[in-house]
Amino acid sequence: MSTDVISGAWPASTHDLAVLRHPDRRTGWVSVIAATLSDPSADLALRCDERLEEINARVPIVGARLRDATWLPGRPPETIEVRGEPLSGAVLFDRFELSWEPPIRVIVSEDGRRLALAAHHAALDGRGMVALIHALVGGPVLAPATVDPAGGGAGERPWTALRRLLLPADGAAPSPTPPARDSLAVRALTIGGRGVVGRIAAAAIGAIGERNRRLGRPWRRIGLTIPIGGPAGIGNVASYRRVDLRPDDDVRDAVAQVLDSGAVPPEHTSAPRALRLLAPIANRFSDSLLVSNHTRYDMPELAQIEVYAVARGRSAIAFGTAGIALGASTLALRARDLDQGDTEALLDATVVRLERAE
Image (cartoon, rainbow, N blue to C red; front, top):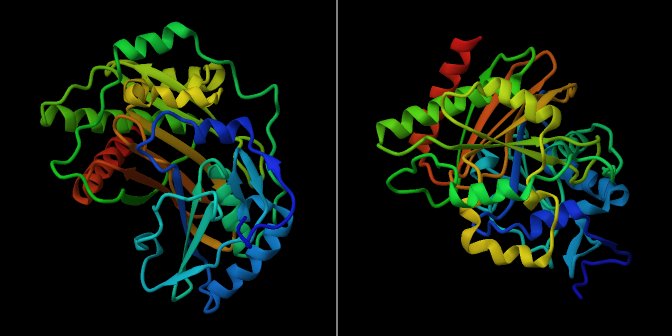
């Protein structure tokens, strides 16, 4: 046992295992959130290290190691300081080796203005990551997030999985030369009111469809995945909904219905080890895109926050939106198989459609 592991242990939850045993093995399940501080801090790296120690004492998942489906408390990581943009850090998207390293990485800019947090999704969901970032810059340390055993929604019917196997969702056309690492793009925008997820999803589906038509790729069957945030806290308690669409469907209405009463995809509700046997055909079950919507957070320590959800599935495309109270929101796009130029162009096309629909 590594010397950086200390006493105590707790079993990985069903949520954790659903990620760890998910049949999509192409993705490293590394979620990323970045933030801009309202006031730069010259000693940001030192402050983060000190806060990580305090947070780890109360929420040990941030320093944990995973062995045999059991989390073992350990030392938190040391903050990495870089010149320039933390999102450019080479280590940011590296796969986590959870048996010997903690499930988070913290990277800050030398000028103390920017902070990026990478986390293995088995340990932290998006809201848990936002809570951790807030704690790192001086906000409260929320208790570990817990899951209501009765919550999360019902599982999907078996025939749904069979239909997806026989008629898989279409993917977004990749770039001719996919990049070596995920491409990231972000835009500031003003968005509010009801049905934000549906509006973003409709704009994104339209933009991808336009790209696919231009490149001669099909866009007839669309699989949309939507994460659903759980209780506040630092941990992994999010659940998911999946809706299958046609290009001429009313996306907003379909999203509203699935958010209200939709079923949870089976790969996110059960986690037998045998699930990995589906890896060779997992791509046929996967979605076309993911849209993750975060609320506007009351965090005066931050001027901006950006959510780069895990890009996986047939398209490996994930849109994420978040905002700071009294400030602009951001819409971020993360793509595994699009180069930077195509990622920027797709995000611009989505924003144009979104603004036209307002």
